[in-house]
Image (cartoon, rainbow, N blue to C red; front, side):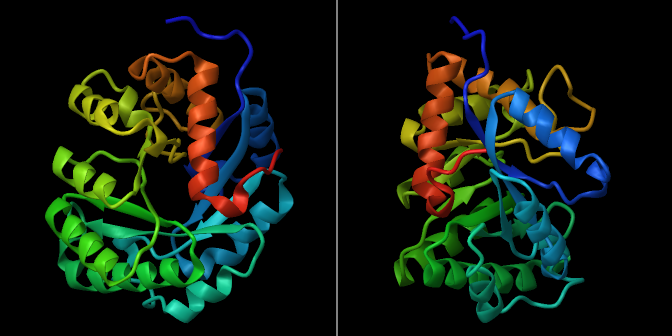
Length: 269
């Protein structure tokens, strides 16, 4: 597989620019991303009380958009979101998605019922706004597939399974509903063979790319702080997986992003 010399325009569909890991570095961080070909990124708010500072980052930088919700691991400690609250946020021109929300039974299984209630609230907000739902799923494949399917039958909505690392059954359930799978740095880890096979079997028009920075840096940065510029490292793995060159895979995932995150479509840095 050949790779292009100059960086192809690419989108980081999920990062956390407001996290303290990046304090005081935003200008340099964005500059490095631009140099790596990252023209757009979506920074994700995980606690609604922090929405103003995430919104401020999106307002400050061209090509930076944002989404907001209550992360499942925070549901027990944060006020329960309301549909009306989430719908109101969607009025901002750079607010492009609902979440991240979802289920995490790895660390926070004690709050499973509250997480499920929160997830359903976010789904209803996604329905009403027509904005994509951004899902975090860990150790909860059966409940996740069940709730997503039940809710879809009650009314259609769009969705991305962010940083997808779950099993083939949940991937199939999500894809059958027309949802998207997002590839993070984990897909580039040497031992992630089964995960790469899940992505390789998915429809090409349903793949997104992300960093989830500051977490999950792909090789050769594994174990260090991740940042949006590194999305190109994961994209190179995706390009090889689909038998494409860098520019082709970047264009594919950017087109997929535009289709799902329609409020950010056509924007440039």
